Length: 75
Image (cartoon, rainbow, N blue to C red; front, top):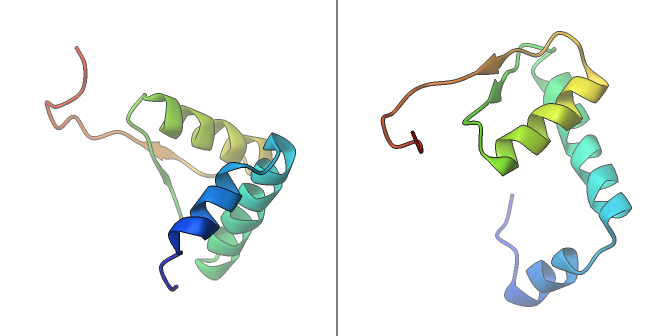
């Protein structure tokens, strides 16, 4: 996948939330299908991984979440 130009990132950031969610679900589905469901969510407990886990859980019930304590997380 090629890098996005700055103007493309700005355009994507300005999209409505429902479109961002739809695009995210499409990407998750592509990833899930490519790996025949042998995927997991890397979960740190932060807002980004929490949202990702929520979306994945709404689509698939067989995707585990994996947490690795690196010692860098907020106590």
